[in-house]
Length: 89
Image 1: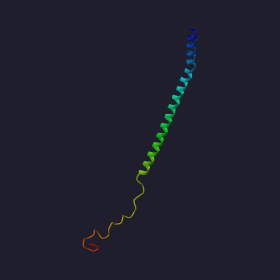
Image 2 (image 1 turned 90 degrees about the horizontal axis):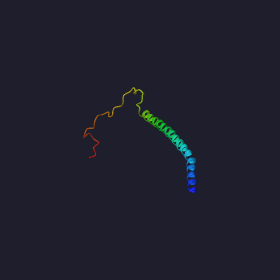
Image 3 (image 1 turned 180 degrees about the vertical axis):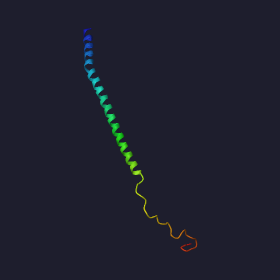
Image 4 (image 1 turned 45 degrees about the horizontal axis):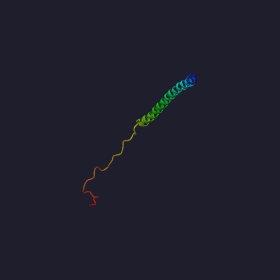
């Protein structure tokens, strides 16, 4: 009977020895993981904002004034007329 009481006390002592470090380790792990996740979220937000800003800048209309002379006409003679030559048929 004294063997089981001694064994029970030993197990209780052993439980008390490793429980506190495990709880401290879990608390530190959760705290560091939460901190790392918030840092990553801030970094991803910054990268996304920077990339969206570059897309907006590349799509903005230019602010250069229009040229002084008008565009040339597409055709100087007008539309083609059938039977005027150049037919190969």
